[in-house]
Length: 180
Image 1 (cartoon, rainbow, N blue to C red):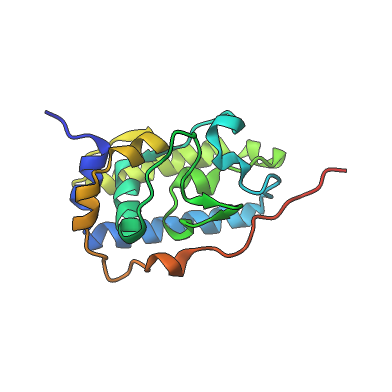
Image 2: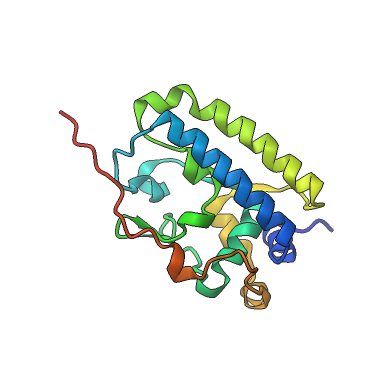
């Protein structure tokens, strides 16, 4: 029997090597995106997947990193198809948010580079997982969150480099760009 993404993530959430790799991966990705200077024009409305009309996907290695970063403040998705970590226009999962959250911008100019950047980085995530012996899975974000057992979350010890939940809440609202 093959494990689902939640089981895989939970089994690897304590891996210091994985956290080190993912932290470096996200730092590099964030720098590459910042260099492109995309603009957020909707203040997190894309986090409400149902009304925005899109889905977010995550890999098993990303979910493992996310599980460890949020073990003390885990939020299960509700019936509404929106990210449970986006509250009042603020992302409460900023440091551990998956690649899809980091790459997606509704800014028209970002359409030229988003897909290529995403595919390039997805290949890197597969390689990281292979190097760390973490079985690869790719799943829709809300389904992946639901697949993580509450019992497994309680057993995850916070790795030394993972910040406590209150420390990574981005208190800034996302900027809103008024169209002329």
